[in-house]
Every structure is written in C-alpha cells, then in structure tokens.
Image 1 (spheres, one colour):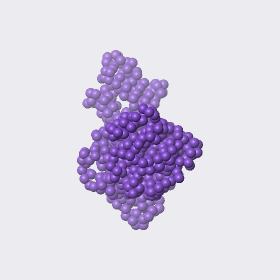
Image 2 (cartoon, rainbow, N blue to C red):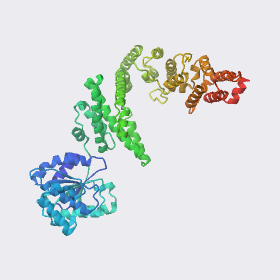
Image 3 (tube, one colour):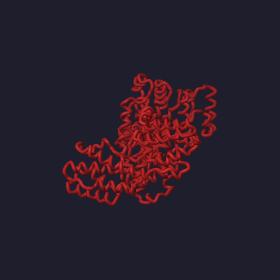
Image 4 (tube, rainbow, N blue to C red):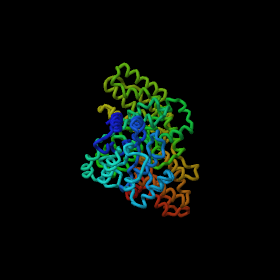
Length: 586
C-alpha cells in the first residue's frame, strides 16, 4: 500500500465512530521507515481529522515493555501528560521512560496523590487504570503502539490487554510492527483476527523522505537522480538511509571549510555532493551486509554482491568508510582524497569524447563515429589523455577496425611517445584481460600492445641504473627505491638487475656486520612471498664475487658466516638452488 492510500485509510479509521475491531496494524520489514512515517508524515496529515473528531494521539514504543502492568502504567502516565496540555493543541505524547517516579515533575499535585494512594491500595497499575479519575475519556484517544514485535509481553497477553482497554474505554489503537518477527506466530495469528481489523502493508515514499530530510539546495539538480537511485534498490533500509544522510551532512560541512577552488563552480560542487551522498549510503549498506555475511545464506550474499556491483562505477571515498566503520573523521585523509577526486574529475572532463563514443556508438552514423574518434586521436597527439585510459582507447580502436571503420595508423607510437614524456607520472597502465569491448579475433592484438605500453611505462618509471657509490646509507636507499616502485619490480620479477653491480659489491666489501645484517633483512623481507627468478643471472654473478671475498685472507670487518648467510639469502631471493650455483661456479 502506498503512502497516500495508507493516510486515507487511517483518516477513515479516525472518523469512524465505532469499530467492531480494537486496532489496525501498519506492517513492514525492519528499516522500512514505519516510525519515521508515523512521526513525521502521518500525524501532520491527519491533524485536521483529529481536531474535527476531538481526538488526541499518543505515541508509545513497546520496545522493552515486559509486562501488562508496565504497559498500563504507560497508558495512564501518557494520558496524564496529555491532561496538562491545552485542549486545542494536538501533540503526540512521546513516552519512553520505564519508571513512574520519573514523571512526578510532569504531574499535577492532585494526580500525583491519586497515583500514590491507588498504589498503596492496589499495588497494581492495571487496577489503577480502572479506578483513576482522568480528565480525558477513552474515546478521545488514539494510541499508536510502535515496535509490536519488540515487546517481551507474550503476544496473547499483549493483544488481550489492547482488546480489553479498547472495549472498556472506547479508545482506538494503531499498531506498528514487523509481523514476520513476532515470536509466537501460531498464537499471534490465532488471536489476531479478534483484535486487528485491518493490516496495511506499508511502503515508504522515497520522494517524500528525500524532500523532508535532505533539504539541500545545492543538490537540487540531483534530487531526481537520487530518487531514481533509491527506487532502483530492491529494498531500502530507511534507518541506514537516515544515518547516511547525517554522515553526508557532517562530511559536507567539513569539506566546505577546507575551501577547494574547484568547488566554487556550483556544477562541480553539486556533482561531487551527489557522489559523496551515494557513497555514504552504499558504503553504509555494504558495511552492514559484511557484518551479517556469516549469518546470510547464499542467496542473501548474492544479493549483497549485486548491489555492490551495480554501484561499482560510483566514486568510493576511503574517508567515508572510516566514518561508517570506525567513526573517524580524519581531516588530512579527507583533504587528500578530495584533491585526488578533483584531479580525476578534471582529467575525465578531457575524455568526454571517449565516454560518449563507448556509450552511444551503436546509435551513431559511421561518419559521426569517425569524427569523434579522430577528436580522441587529436587529444592523444597533444598528450591530453591520461595513460590509464589508453587500454580503453585501444579496445575501442580494435572494435572500429573489426567493422572496417578505421585503418591502422601511428596511434600506438603516439602513446609510447607520451608515456616517455611521463606527464602522468603516478598513473599506471593496467591490462584488463577480460575486456569484453575488444572483438574476440583482436584480443591477442589488444593484449600485445597494452603489454608493450606497460613495458615502456615501467622502463620510464624505473629510470637509470641505481648507483650506490655516493651513498653512505646504501641499504636505506635500496629499500626506498624498491618500495617506491615495488609493483614494477614484482611484475618484472627482478630488482638487482637494475642496480649497478660494481657499486653494490664495493659497498658489501667495505661494510660492517650490522650493515650486512640489515641488507640480508631487506632481501628476506621482499622475497618472503614472491620469487625474483628474472634476477638469477645477476645474482649468480654477485654470489661468485662474494665467494671470492670468502677465499681472501681475513682482513675484512665482516664475519665470514655473515657472507655465507648473505649468499644463501641471495640464492633464495632469485630461486637458485645452492648446489646448482656451486656446479655453475665449478
């Protein structure tokens, strides 16, 4: 049932003088926004009907209520709160306290005396409900009882109490809950038909929630897109959505204070806020899903995976995950990530032709496709396209070649030239082996050229040979260089082939035991989970020279066992069998 139909049904219930049933139920899963709807939408919509019928609404949560006595005390105390309000003002009386004494300051002295006297006589709030003289008649009140499934009162007692009070006092009840989560389902359905006249299956209206809760003028242009995004969800947990909105608003204010020039443009700012809000919501949802992963069955896990994949093209911010998972607001992390987002956005603006082509080429005429692709080639020639997009350009190029729309040209040479200029130093080209945009008969061509580009980029990034001659702390220099380009060295399965052997051997020969021990530690650390077998030739050469030091008369500062261990570590690093090394030396 949609929101408007539900409101009309509740209005009818309010206006009906007498009903043959005691209550109606608004039923929906947890997180569907039932409580939000009642407190923020329903009451506002039915105010006029309440006033015309001279009725008052009282809201009580059943969460934590564990006895009929306590429930009846809530009814009476809520009514007493209402008795202190002017008769012409309709307000939901929110009551979440568990003890009577907490209300003493809200009660008139006369009513307080009546409660105390009744307690002495009866010791039971159930009996007080029958004897206490109130300024409100039962038929004037509509009780909203939320969290039906969270009450620990046995369901037959709870519904029996509601039925008795409705019959004796003439009041009405609107129950809110998740029917599926009520513990004793058999007893519930057995007694339900005697108490609950109508069950309304509730579905929240996304637009009314966004309009009511977001209220962000700077996102006005994206409201429709946000609503579409949420409407496409199989199920929306509104509790998660409200928490996400709070996180979004806090992060937005923090980012505003940092003052990025790029966001002075309202269009840039709006687009960023949309991506930030989307990430706040989906990241929160993913975190909750991951916490439940062990409890989920295969089907549930599959659904969680689907909504992650469906939104994988959205920008993901690490700082959003930090906030959602740990509650950490790291300003320096936020600043750094937003700066990277801005750089990426500026670069993507330069590649609109590529995005447009990939998404729309099948709707375009041949001449228009060629025109747009030539514009991409022009951007390539002026080195205005980031290297990370080269594989996408190549895949689209082969698609055009496969349908005889384009002939091979010097595009690949232009790419290699650009890479050598190293304009986009920290942006790495990667091969997507499963790129389904590449025609099957051109897959090998695609892989070959992308691998060539990766090799060119790695050569540029590795740079000239590492010379240790002028470095006193040569081990630290090796560590620093290795870790700055670790991905490249691991991909090439080699490191020492890029180090000047003469300078390295000189450092080894002139070092002390502590330095050699540090060098051995570095070797063991980087080879622990990876083999550098492409370094075998250079390592054999190094080992041969080190063994010469071992044969020379002792005059070195280094203990011989340290050099023995070093030889062993180098062999292990390059995946060389010690016996094989000895044979090669012989």
